[in-house]
Image (cartoon, rainbow, N blue to C red):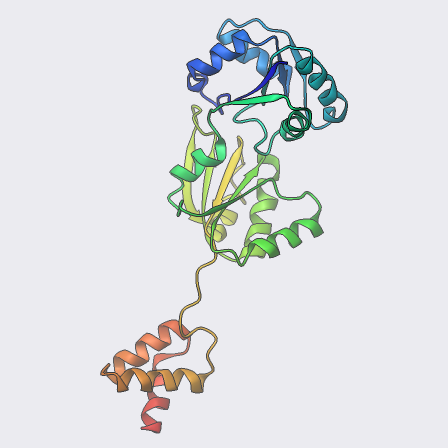
Length: 276
């Protein structure tokens, strides 16, 4: 029985292909590629000559069992995508599932991923995140998905093609509100660009700027509500009085609650003073 190797390939700069990845690609019996033309350029650069079969979302149902059959017969194969790690918002997930179902050995040859590369350079929190990839194409489904993501405090990661960027930025602003966003474009390539801004500013910028290259969008999670958020004016005034009772000056207490609740400092000051 053969082995299926999940081989990570460069997301831009060909120098990022690891020595082990090059070795595996040279040794396997055949390569399953998302786009054989793209992979041919990579193999030619490293002077690797191997037979390839196409494996992508449109032929996976047919090609998957064919590849499994060859693996069960003793051949070894590598699966690669056009850029990055197979199975991560790219073809391969179904083939790996078939391998598990048929007892075929799987081995990972880690390589670059656009999502993690963008997150690392984004300037936004990296400890907790949600990888969303490409949003649904249909408007209704996209809105439903954004409604589910909007309350999450984790940093959000999206992929987008240049010709859809403007529409996606508008949908993100509508669905998530005006948050920080890091637009990461053409990572590891000659015109790599990382821009930390807000969704509102990004929408305004791309009204006149033509999107170019593939984008990874890193969007800040929802900010936690301030302690005074959602209070009625009377409740906010009571909070001011409690702070005063703990030793905070009336002016400072009104200022703090005004900042957290959104009410005007003078209004809260007057209400708390009248009660006293």
